[in-house]
Image 1 (cartoon, rainbow, N blue to C red):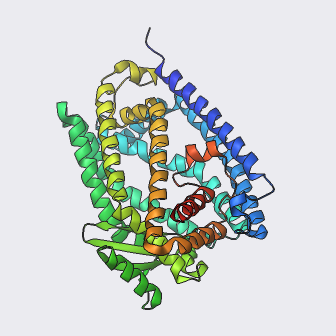
Image 2: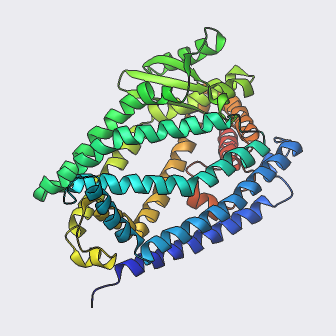
Image 3: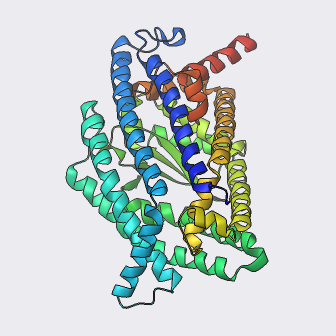
Length: 424
């Protein structure tokens, strides 16, 4: 008797759902605490704390509903054989359009088109509610319904433009790869990631946001001086109009080798009146670069990608695995989907491990900025970002360890303060 792979996958998905729901309940209890953590007393105003708690509880309730609907749909799709049924229907559509059903590329593209329509139908109500109810209720949403659907349309167009050649290439590589399939797939994805990282900020991101050079002035001079002192090859310094969509704030950098760019959200500049706080946030980001965190993360992703493709090559020839999910053929895309489901346990462990590493990197970047003399300003900047973004003030340690790639504010401030005590 063949092993019931599909039933095992669905069972584990449900177990993960119950575990994550338990963590959500722990976090919800933490969010209901009526007082600030001791570290934040006198640092965060009571008014901001109450607003943050209300916002976090609203998002928590929304997440409960969203996750329940998601596990219900995902389990039903696998358990009731909707995936193989839809694959057969997409083949019928290919024939109806006058093409050969045996052409796996056309069959796969028809299948993906249907999946995209389905995902838009199921995700749209949640996206609309999140944006125009929760985010609007708490003063964050700034976009109109027209802008929302315009962005949605642009995203669909990009998927239609970029998806087919990428999917076609993957199918051809799997069909022709032979014993070196994992290497060829990894090499293709490696080159694709480099191309996308190069093209995204130049061609894709400007389709959704307006990027303008940071005006001449004291803030620009301070950032350029900091970058120069660290030998950071800063080529361009942009401000992005994040305020057209949300009042959340952020800053990031990107680019290869000697062509680095820094992007500040206009909301960050508006919220942090003190230039030193903004520069301290940039010092933190530059710390990631100086300490090679970005390179380490990129290498880790490449290793994991290669291992995943190696695992896929081991299971793609298993007819029992495909039959367990209701397939009598072994399409490339379906093989990738099934493989992703079968390694869910490993994926959660890897994600947890990466979060631990990422949190460690954040502490190191904070320490780097402090070493440059931005300790006090960084502290003020982190507090300001926490306040303005209404981030959770009280967090459950289990929940944050499992979900957060960044340490909670309480832990970051404690680490900064601890280094002060050691210096004294």
